[in-house]
Amino acid sequence: MSAIRVVLVEDHDLTRAGMRMTLQQHDSVQVVGEAANGQDGLKLISKEKPDIAIVDIGLPDIDGIEVTRRLKAEDPEVRVLILTLRDNDQTVLAAFAAGADSYCMKDIGSADLFAALQTTREGHSWIDPSIARTVLGQIGSQPAAGTSTVQINAAEPEFTQILEASPLTERELEVLQLIVEGRSNQDIADQLYITVGTVKTHVRNILSKLCADDRTQAAVTALRAGLVR
Image 1 (cartoon, one colour):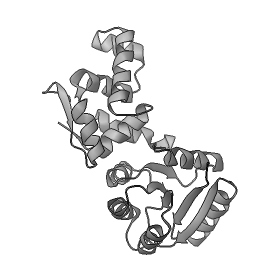
Image 2 (cartoon, rainbow, N blue to C red):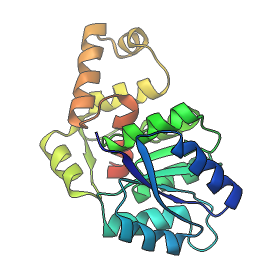
Image 3 (spheres, rainbow, N blue to C red):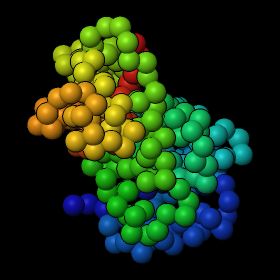
């Protein structure tokens, strides 16, 4: 497989230099450019067409969320990995709503960063474990009364097509809400008065309908699609 081509957008010189050195330790990663602000980053990404743009949120001109939004509008094929010190709910959710593919904290280890890059290039979302519950919790916080299915109005056309064909049922949403609360399959079965086997079937259906490999990816897909009643 060819090297992962990366553009790094980070305003702090020492942080950017350290990140570059970390990335260059891996033969399968190629840093094709660096920028110290959002405007220069967008120009560089447009020119180099990297596989992944690593973008800091706290940029001095336009923040990383706006960079992500503009980048995705111009070239949805470039994947964005947000790298930041910020882990508050609003920032995390805003980043994914803008189109970010993955989200890492700046204290991430070298091995985890490399894994995040690989996962992101493969088209999946990598979420730092410290903020995974924030993303999952956004799904669980949706109201659960009313209609028998959950309507998802997607910002990206492929999400709309996927979810119009296979909408989540009310029961599947109930199962998803209990999952994000940390409930085991047995707990879910007991609360909903169904068998563990039925719970497993619902979980498989949720992942299948959202085209997700695991529960966290399903949550990110639903979040980015705009899960609403």
